Image (cartoon, rainbow, N blue to C red; front, side):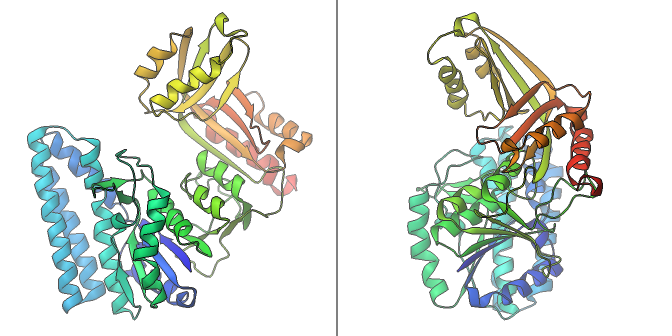
Length: 452
């Protein structure tokens, strides 16, 4: 059994969905379970419509809703044509868009959105795409059956970034998915969304369809998890920043996880964790070029000092200084407890006897965090920073690689420099406008023909 997840561009229109069906036809012997994202751009449009409605712009919101309705109905018509399946899908689309229009009117009256209501809105994209894909597969000769992912992906009630309940997911997968696969059918589920044990819709956060696929793969003890997207696989850098970035055909789990956490857009940061627990190979493939090699992620990939370079902006540095921290047992634990209580994720940390510096993503709520941190001492924040990370399983054991990295940075100011405890990741905090230039210099140092 395999789990194959198709992103928004891989199900973006009728042509893309037909291409996806061809991919699945070639994998029927491997008993595929299919996970699909919303049609490309749908989730952003849904959230924009909700925000417009809450801001009192109901006409604009309804206009956007109707444009989405027309797009989904047109896609279904092209793929499914006429008949009972077509009627059922059209009725489902109409029902969901009527629900969406009513929600927009409610938001307009209330004048605000709650995290729970945003999850309800955001999940509609996958609730629309999965029935269309399942029906299209059937029309194209695949014995596909729609499974409501909310009946399988059970989560807590942390709306916007729900926490999966893995034992409950495994039990539901055994009850609802395994019998279908054993009967030779192809289950099709929407990614990204789940539900509480009481049936309230939740989401895993943006990019969560990858995570859904990994959770289903772990629950089903799948042979492999395939992430189908619009790029050839994981690259040595973001090709939008480094045009000559190279395909990585084989990479270790820990390297891939680090790259995802530090800005590699091709993979959701949480995707790797469920696969690692079960030792399930993950493949990243291009649905527009299915004949390509893609990237294979396993435990036993070859070791290199530097495997790839990642970067991201929108980083805030938080500095806490206090002489009282000198020799004070538990000081660091108390500081990190503050971030944990406020569900604020920390990326990079450096410490001394009387200070700690750390980074968080811009946009996370910091007011309450900073108020509590001031109980420990002086607190400063520095905005407008970015992270550049060199990732390689052999990095910590390679003094020449470390020296080459520092030399490549040149006279760019480093605000923080941190080598991970495992030696797999050298992280540099620079001014945000220096992230891309530093990435290009590092890539040239390690991956250009002259560097070979």
